[in-house]
Image 1 (cartoon, rainbow, N blue to C red):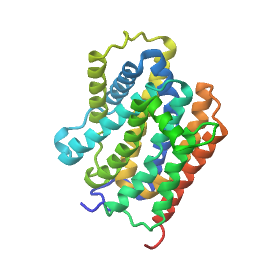
Image 2 (cartoon, rainbow, N blue to C red):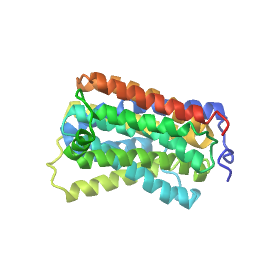
Image 3 (cartoon, one colour):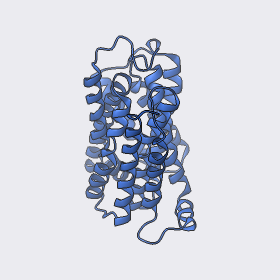
Length: 304
């Protein structure tokens, strides 16, 4: 199937793109909520409760689609990428040593917009110019700047920051690549259908298995943590459904580039929710990541 012409779509390109943009709005609130839920329920247990609740809500509203209707590549490979992304992102934020580091890890996730455009160009889904290279470089430099803190930067300092919590940082970088891969594969093999309901269920199953095999304490849900789980679950289930529509039927370059709003909005919401004041260097890094995504988007509008 041609990536630019999904089959039998009931969505216009414009409406599908608009629906995809809603996902960006919903996701902006996720980092802060994931962190406070992890603090209350544990990194793995909290994430498992989030995705279980998201799937239960989805079943009540739409049920589960038949597996036989999906392209096997999308179902199995796309599902694997989706589950891996969710596990990596939620655990990276949960494993952060403190709330400031959780915000750093959340920012690393926002490398996915420029990575999505790069992969779309490499896969022939989008045309792009050589401006993609400096755009991607600027986004990665922004992450380096976010992690440098208020002091001077050096390779040794950067390596030290990574080694301070290598597992969390490794998961965050992996998440950015995984979501870019999922977005591109979904557009190519999704066939106009959404497997998010099954993917959320599989994510919950993986997290519960990890929780059962781990040594986290028993989960004790309070009214406060329960409300947070409910809100985030609604945003998660709705956001991914909207994104799936957007990447399959809308303009993938517009969606990826428009997500440059997400880092700024996410940091604003997370800093308010977590009561953490980002440093000047952190905000400079956010601007670099945003500008890099915008340059990548612009590169798809110029001749090669």
